[in-house]
Every structure is written in structure tokens, then in C-alpha cells.
Image (cartoon, rainbow, N blue to C red; front, side, top):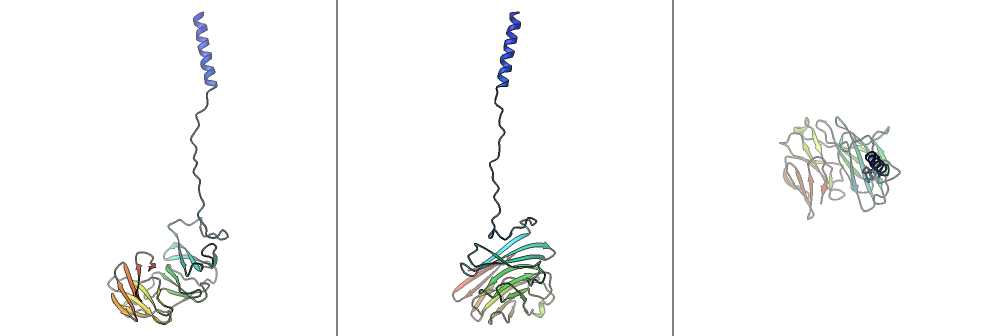
Length: 244
């Protein structure tokens, strides 16, 4: 009988301990997801449908306040949609001035390789597609609102070639250089203007030379330009961008 009472007492103690135990907490995450930065809360520069591989931006500033931002959306088959924004406060806010999907848009087709402005009104875009004997060069004279295709004469040796164009570099308001890369690697093609881009003089297979004070050296992956004791370089890997 005493043995039975002892067993019952032990069982009661165990049951009491189990009913008062504290549950083991599960770990919780304290990570916070931050939204992607947006230059202007009133515009949506980030597309929810585009992956990071299909969307890219190109931003250029004329001075500390005036600038432009191009947002590209690659769609495949040499097609790339584009929106263009401008800022007058150093990038604190952005205003859309162009969208290639809008009816009547004059933004260029093809895959863009560069955007540059020489003043508040005059700017240039280079673009590329499987065109034969064509240099994709477009110009604006109203700050990027409208664009027009420019005529760039291609040498007879390359009229059947695809020609990849990089953004022009203007050294003065009149003098500039435009580097291209024909699909045939055995050729080198560049252009120089001395009238602000109204006309472009071609230089075929001149790897190292100079004209009107502009000196250049070209390799398979790099272009170097010297003018007035300054040196600029252009990396010709993927999209090109000039650096001083």
C-alpha cells in the first residue's frame, strides 16, 4: 500500500512540473527589406516586371545641377525600350521628358550604347542593331525632348558591315570624335567633326594618328584620345563610357 502511494505521489509531482513548463521559443528573423532607391518619389524608375539583367541606367551631368538619366529595358532581338528624365537640382528630383512606348516618340530604337550632352540643349545618343552600313547616331537640340537621326557616311569597304557605335566625345563645342567598331575586326573606323557634328570625316584603319589637334590610339578594347594636354579613355567592352 505504501509502495502504491509513493508511486502516485511521484506521478503527481511529474504532472505538476510538466503543466508549469515554459514553451521553447522559435527563432524569429529581424531582417528588414528596404525599398529600392528612387530618385523621385513621384516617378517609378524601377520596373516590377524587369529583372536586373534587363534594366539599366545611364546618367550624365552637365554640371552639379543639370543632368539626364536614361532608363533602358532590354526586350531581346535588338529591341530596347527607353525612358529619359532630366534634373535641374543635382538629382534630387527627376522629370520624365521622353518614353519610347509613347505614340510619336522620337527616341531611337536599337540597343543604346551611350548618352552625352554638350550643353543644356544639345545632346547625342548612339544606338546599335543588326544594321548594315549604318552608324546609329541621334541628336537633340531641345534638351532631349525630341531626337533626329544623323547622317554618317560609311566607307565603301564597310557598306555591308554591322558597325557598333560608341558615344561621341566633344572636346570643344565644334570638335568631337566618334569611335566605332565594325563587326569585321580587321577594320578600324572613327569619325571627327569640326563643326559641332553637322559633318563627320571618316578615318578608316588609322589605328594611331592625329587630326586638327586631336590625337588618338585605338586597340581592340581601348581608345585613347589626347587634346590640349588632356587625355580621355574609352573602354570598348560592352557599353562604352569616356573618362578623363
